[in-house]
Length: 276
Image (cartoon, rainbow, N blue to C red):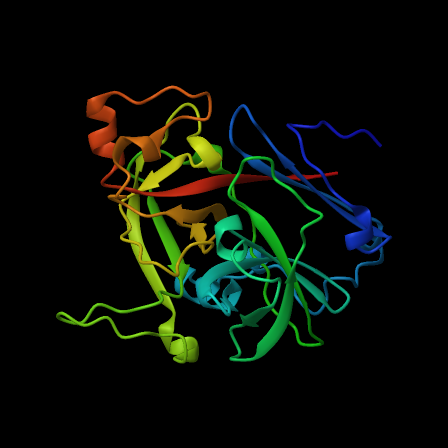
């Protein structure tokens, strides 16, 4: 079986089941993260019976978002993530590297049923310079998995949805903390694609959208109008760093006009899906 590598990635198969290899290939050219699944157990037809993919159902985008979005709690902060894989009792969450990088690999994962699970960062899986990471937890419960859509099918003006768990909610001049809110902290925003640069920014960001994000929603999923996962949210609009926050992966800078448009948008790392 041949694999077409789209970029550099370091993966230790010891962190994954022997009969199931999840290769995560990050492209340094297009900035697109590609999932390549090699799953011999699929032939048996029962490995995903407890967490069937919703692509064959008629779930609404808000319902899908609630089912597949998780909160990642650490001693030093919190972020969001999305359920992308399930094998046996092990679930895999995709999130931002900056969500998990500032702690001692001790996480609590809040799932859609309100349960808390103990998670661990798969440090053996690296994404080069892209702001991505994997976290795993174990559970005998059945959770929905995100269906991956085609990022390249997005166009300027297309509707997109972003979900996550803000660390605070604005209310007049106060910012209540949501750490102990449980599922009440969940938020789903709707907006439109505003920019699709031909090349990725540093850390892999390449989808700009009008959805207003809040701290804590980093690592959360970006969905197209069909409820399919097309990106991982992580870049807030109007960053304090100015134009330096929008350096392209090749080291070049945007024009002043492009920068002014960029800083008004939130940003995500696009993903694509390949099955072998």
